[in-house]
Image 1 (cartoon, rainbow, N blue to C red):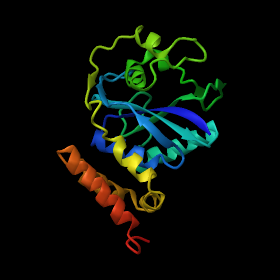
Image 2 (tube, rainbow, N blue to C red; image 1 turned 30 degrees about the vertical axis):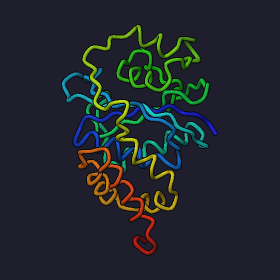
Image 3 (spheres, one colour; image 1 turned 90 degrees about the vertical axis):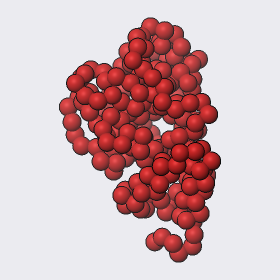
Length: 224
């Protein structure tokens, strides 16, 4: 089992819903452990586009790095991402930041992520989870790297006490039968569940709706 840090970003459509959708599709390939807060961040690289929502998760996987990369690309396509220009707008973006202490360079994948140290929109949420995590190449901590970048324009969207949007994915992976049935639903049906939960204005209502979804998915004979 390997520990992996993934960055998630979205700046088209319903950004929070797309983040939640991605987090529900990660298990069982990546079993979620913790999620950072969500941040709204200005675009990087190509500036003429909407602001992003960004977050980072830490999880565990049994997949090899290149297999995981392929799985993440399929997940992006399932959510609806189309090929676009580099650094351009996208429905969802999933990047591998760290994979244990692995240092990998290939035509398809570099680990640690080669531009991680330049990106405040990655380092800020990463610092929520692992400020003392050591970069295996630079031998600097995430906290040290964050001190060297410009954090202006980055605003927190969710609080420490607000578990959204990762709470749905975490709930599903605690109930394998519900997760299995959820993953077999068409993406449009998955999003109907997520929209219903996201519409809840109070945390208690949100948790009740998550529990309702789990019960409905595990109800015998309810789904194929």
